[in-house]
Length: 179
Ligand SMILES: Cc1cc2nc3c(=O)[nH]c(=O)nc-3n(C[C@H](O)[C@H](O)[C@H](O)COP(=O)(O)O)c2cc1C
Image (tube, rainbow, N blue to C red; front, side, top):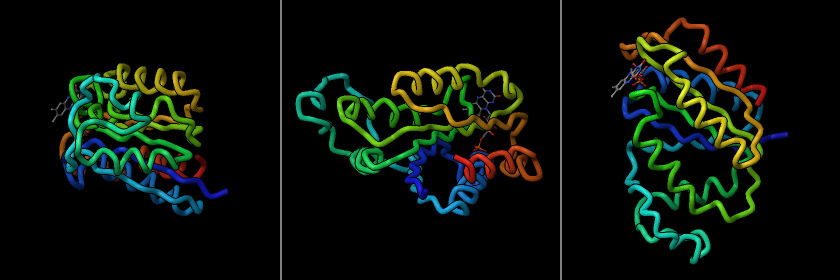
């Protein structure tokens, strides 16, 4: 059955390695009949969560007036949430983390989301250096009762095209097809 997939894309570098890995995932997901919406969070106006709990009192409405409602509305309808990010100092990018923190506004809502996946690229640290980001993803899945559907990490990448020809592209395509 066709699923509604929302990707929070955290790389600020257009057409870089994470972009190419995510494009492969999208290709697979769309070839299987799924609908994919991707948000380039680094190009959006998204402030950091202020921890004011206004969204709890006002039922999902954040006190900040920025681009985040676009993402929240899409996540309210998402069967699957995917995070895609390069590794920045052993975590996802700050831009992606800002968006993730702001999903606090959805915590008290019933949502259709059942699964999540993680796509990452890294430099010299490789797959091992991503353990913190992977732990965050796994804990998010447990916390939200989502099936942790898959992680694809490509390490050893610096230049924008370094991922070309790497097997992780096919892994991401397959994950998109099968998710
Ligand atoms: C600010 C910054 C921090 C980074 N931190 C790490 C790191 O901690 N470990 C690592 O292996 N690579 C690190 N990298 C390398 C990137 O994760 C890697 O080159 C990635 O493929 C870039 O993705 P992109 O092509 O989508 O920009 C860092 C790069 C930048 C710009």
